[in-house]
Length: 272
Length: 129
Figure 1: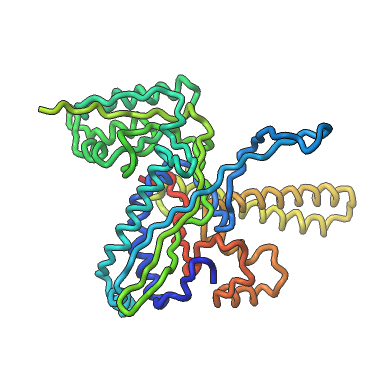
Figure 2: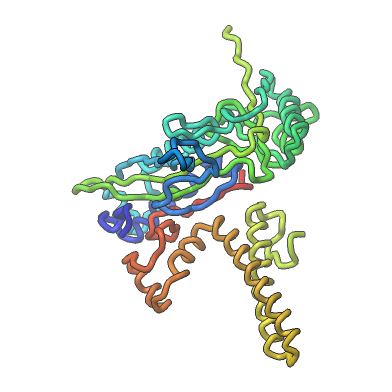
């Protein structure tokens, strides 16, 4: 048994399988950052820190000996608790396929949102700096009119190229902007989505947690998500009616190349 | 085309799957080369040629190890199995029995993704929309 204590939960193998099958595709839809940055690991629950290869000078132990200390980036642990009805899990073990597990779905959405936000915009309490906090380029402003988005995206790609950052390039978009783009056809009937894909050479990603948009290089080696324990389900407690579980992961995130991204900001709409 | 070995139309596969295919094909080629060099080392009666061939064979082992590590970093289930079986000394089939019983005594750091370990095995989603 590991620290997730799953063997103590009143859930049979079929129940675990049903829970995992329910949440995995939802997480894969919401985990936008992993679609755009490098993923390293998982390196295990015992993995505590990312080596950054740098030192800090400290006082030497004696006048004849100098000292320095290795700097590391500690992993953060994220955990989202949820409670399921035991009757629903019992139904899953009977083979029910229309499961209703709202607590699980909410926990998955919250955890994915937290991971996305940490990667794209940072997580100050965990000392993780996000992509928009580290970028060396000034943000570009998106026009109010979605038909003009290609101009801003092409400008962002040009900024990256001018900085010597190769493609292909990807675009993380807030859900609102993404929906607007999917619904928009340009003059001549061409889908805006396809036009943007052509400019980028890479994919557009629906990214809950992102404010505005972020154009970034997908060439690899610029943004590293280091996983300790990948998202897992653990057991907390149970009673006659309910079982309390949690989703948990540990990770760090580093921007290795601040030149490899450009933030896109939405122009505030005038109130009428 | 990434390789003649694709079993599905390339336009149905995402970038990550094709890269996995490239790596797995390379791993197979490196191990096949080790096998071929091994046989040539055994077969030749020229000791200086045997030494060159053995040196080349061992370099292929390094290449195979590097490719396997690339795959491990991107495949949580493979990672779990390698952590369970590699660098152990017990009988290999006993390790399987212990791992499946969840005793954990034969497993590595518990980073796994196989069902029962708790991990959902999501890993990298790079290349997908």
